[in-house]
Length: 235
Image (cartoon, rainbow, N blue to C red; front, side):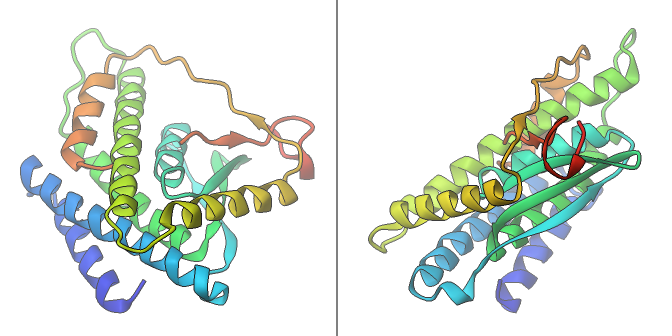
């Protein structure tokens, strides 16, 4: 990401993260940042189609720590999947190490957005009262699930709009090829994977969390390296 674009996106996200920011203001800042990030993703993909050396396929490991590590993993996956990155979840200490695969520019976008959304989610949870009779941890887990689901949908919508709004020919094919290449890289490193089972959450925070995700105006399932998977990775 160019320094000028990176500076602008960081400034917008910093404004969205400000606890003094109203929900409407936060939504506006985050929406603009998301639009810029999505357009940047398409531009970098088209450039790499002409010169692959400008944006190689790579990987990185992101440590996700307690509390609510598994719920934060869900948010990271919700960000990564629409941005054409793939994740493998590995136990690590009291949390997880998420092994991300993607093109360099897309991994950069995931890192930038996930870091900001963690802050926004923390502010949202802090400002949400746990209803009487609700178990706080269960309510917060379901809140984060609602937040992540809406984030993923919003990001997917932004990516689709950026691709359809590009005047360059063959954008859809270029992006599909990038997704295929990322999946191939993942399969080379982890030939035997199983999908993580769907979680069942009992808390009543899904609706408030989803509403917070809509206010963030953003938009993935993670993959679990289970028993028997390569490198002795357990669930």
